[in-house]
Length: 99
Image 1 (cartoon, rainbow, N blue to C red):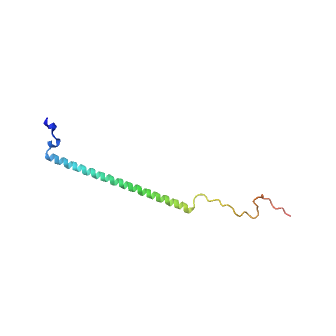
Image 2: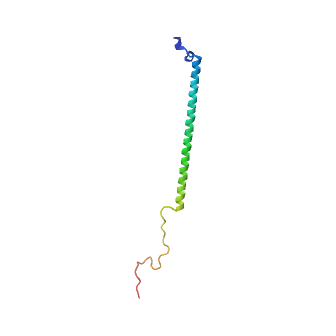
Image 3: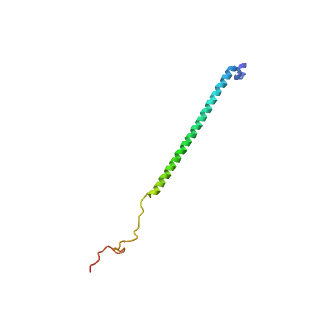
């Protein structure tokens, strides 16, 4: 019954403890490397996303500038300021009487 009260680390030999510590050290290093890799991938993904957004904004701005240069849209209706010389604006088109 004394074994139940003892610390499990005391029951292991020095060799077993050294082996366990080495194994745990390797596991810790692997986890740290995996975490570092995930962080780098996350940063790379964010940078790629930001670059894609910047390219999209540049394309949008270029398209907007291109639309402004061409005039785009419907042409504006022009009002005639000089009516034809033979017609008056209030009278219908009636041929002139010959004398």
